[in-house]
Length: 288
Image (cartoon, rainbow, N blue to C red; front, top):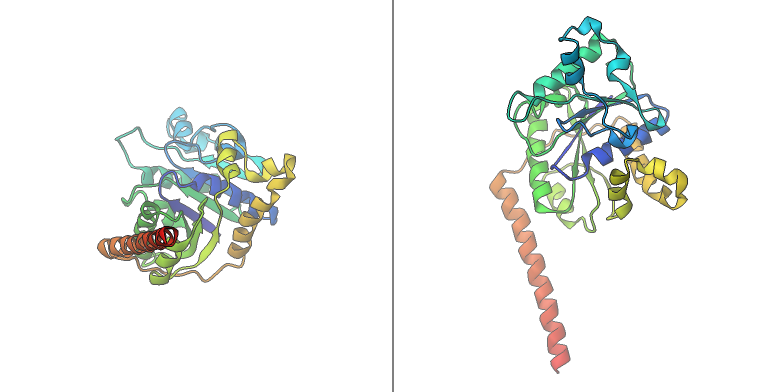
């Protein structure tokens, strides 16, 4: 199984990806996580440091694939999860999609790409060009990370469009949405009611999820020292268990931008009107 994890920049894709990878490993699967971001920090909480990138290694070997060994580019992280960072071109030059393609090409040359039960692509956010969608060419499922806000759902809708487009030529399905660190899910529910797709999990607003990234550890590693954090791990294990059923998934159809804007804006306006009416009712009660 090959998974691509997408979402708005800063939404928590890497934190979620690493914890899902550990959860899948805890279920007995051999996992490779590939970071697809020029920042090359996807696997930081698994390895504890910024591992060398595929592009750095290829450049150091003058792009002679025959001189590269698996141990040059694959690093084992916490829980036995293997890690690769694709890296990226210099800022403002080149294509990230090309780098992903070269990464897959190299892993195939090393006979490593098909040695894993599950490969997780953690993809950079807020880009909607063809290169951005390149990991979908190699994936069975896409997972979208979002929160309950307009911007994240707008980005999710764009990713939905990419999944639909790629599904025309690839056996790709959307596994579903994962809500990350959110107090509410009303907008998420409103969106999936109109644009039908599964919601795999919604993680509550837990500060330890953010702290784990700062500490460079997964929630599973932190939970070894603090058993009160084990309940958070259960959210990721639930996602893993759903994926391991090899769900049918969906070929989603995105909402037109204006329709999505109106849907979420109307919801905000109606919600705020209701709050104002409650306030006015309470004020009238106090005055009386």
